[in-house]
Image (cartoon, rainbow, N blue to C red; front, side, top):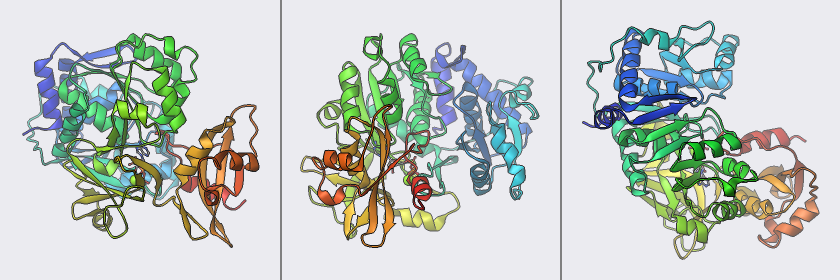
Length: 507
Ligand code: ATP
Ligand code: MG
């Protein structure tokens, strides 16, 4: 039976001396990685971790993250990645919701854990350990030193659960999507169909706790024996240096990363000759930024990916030629091994030109929301995952995400899709970042509010923005109010609109 840790063992057997992981000057070959994973698995067993137990892993990107995760897989236990930026209440929610018996902490992760003492106690408090060294906590790594490097005697099946990935919590409380080994391994077939191979060298910068970097790139890459360079955090210069130095062939960036990298004065002059495939997604990327990206790095083939945690993350994509031709679109094809439809409220496919909800069906969809049968039944209906994303479809089959159902603005009885308005405003020369939200309004039900961060030295006015955007969208979609401030985004670059609404509505 194929399992994630089984695939690692196979990669180790086929390519024992090949570099598997590179992090801050340390390198592990596939054989060393496999042995480290076994030692960690034995140490976790000594802590009482057995099949089906949940092990929470709160860490920035590091080699220790990957080793610990595979150790949990090897025991048939379930990894629960936690956003390293989670606050104490968010961490508490994930720990109680998943019922984790162990919490592993990466470097610098102590404040959120220490804040737990000020909250209601967790009924079954987890055993807390440092992955490496953290003052005041036992170290998992120290406990692995005396453990054997042979695989523990545990039978893990393809149908065993392996991971609970929490959604980003963009629209509310994060929900835990449960997956088994079979589902996670199928994602590998999808990525291979988009051109990634065992010969690739990946650079992992986007957060590993999030499904996109973790499943599409890290799990898939280890399964096929590719090389993985891991950076602890995003910094544009460091990413450009790593792409060059490690002769990276595949890279995923979220839109904000590419937008910041494009500000490097020498990006086009760098030696990125090894870099074949670039991927972007996780949040809408303004068409102007897509154009700038493909023009600055013409030798890289950029795919757009759009999916969601619950999909595994299955979704839709644009080929590199389509990205060049249609920087405004989000996707045209279902990711291989998946089906996609765009439907109206009655479940009928929408006509060309109309907008509807994207729904997905395929091998990689989550099994369920962990411990939430009602939410699962609401989201997966007749085998179709209802994404909550609204896309407009054109006659050529291009789908463009125009909003999330929860963020759509209804003003004067008409639906306004916020991403459409954001894209219309993003092209304004003084706009560095923009979010469009609805505020309650006595006359219109909701009023369209543009929240703008201007470029340094740039000035924006409501009238100026309205005039600029009127070339792209109808009058009733133009903002009626302007707020100038920073826009809260999560590490994937997603705008936290519920936070923005809460913070601005009482003004
Ligand atoms: P929550 O479900 O907890 O509110 P979330 O939906 O943001 O959070 P994820 O599963 O990480 O959590 O994100 C999936 C969502 O991200 C999609 O539903 C879609 O709205 C957005 N998204 C992903 N890729 C793209 C893309 N390429 N373009 C536009 N939006 C995207
Ligand atoms: Mg979601």
